[in-house]
Image: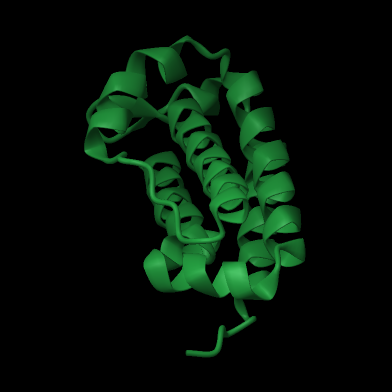
Length: 145
């Protein structure tokens, strides 16, 4: 299956959305609850973590020449929660934007055959906008309430 390269614009748009949001957030808003256990800052740190995971997947896929999928899931989120909560809110916001930018650039330059392997294995690893926008919607809802 041919890779739909529209992921580039989707990812760039979600990173710009992230950047615009982060640039407007006050320190108080970064501490606003999002759901039961998260804050806006934790949500942003979560996005940075998962974009870093995708960069690791790219590195290992390139190294092995085949789809690499580390055994992660909800356990990672649950185990990482105390670590994310310890990150100063403004730093979490900075990390989210910086990591999204870096991840987008690596995805855009990644070799097409390996990118297709990754996409076919787990679409969310290539179309980062799917994951980012899900959490940005949650953050926006929390900020409105």
